[in-house]
Image: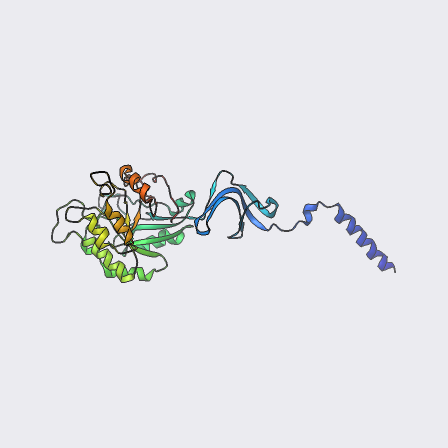
Length: 338
């Protein structure tokens, strides 16, 4: 009997203690870890364009709804007046050394142009969570880019592989022997989860043609590699009288290939009478993709405004890179793919 009385008294004391505790002591674990409240959600894939709340649980979006109670989340961020989107994709950036030699700053260096790759995680400040390096490295230099940048970045980094084995900024972009389609294809096959296409750029814009430097050497080599691995080619191109823009986009490029810097000064976007060149519509109809690739000098308003009014751009990308003097990165401005 005495033991029974002790037990009863213990239960009574415990009850008084429990009743005296704050109600918060017994609240359940929050349903969500993070709640972004009151932001304007733009999610094209799910056709959402409205003020909504976004709840996150662990590393997953758990709910996108109106008026999720703040009490259901461990942390609440007021996103009123802000846009909330899925991670953005930028298909044209430059990271790493590319082909620039490590001794580029010395008199003995093969080339003396500073590497213009940006720190990959700089993209996060603009909401970009996936970026694609646009041919900074080639078959010879890609392993270093992967080790230095891609493997260590918080953002997801994919790449177009330059048809030039040394890549960009190494002083070898005009060396046709560097444009080895077989070696390019073999490298892409080693890294199928990272390399998403081929890049050709900056080839022989002004000098007279010679036995080595024929008009379409870089384009043809890049397309040879692209066909071998069934991946698109991105073209940074300078037209000349015997290497026309029309031939590039209507004959050389395959459906799914990408012409970057489309609004740059060198392309015949507008005819002399101010009308849009019909070859653009023809190229788009056959599957050619146009990329802005803004960069530091590849966006001319007289070309952009007229074309944008009619079509818009399929990809609005930055071509973000360190400025020409090796200094501060150009202003990062990215837009969602699609």
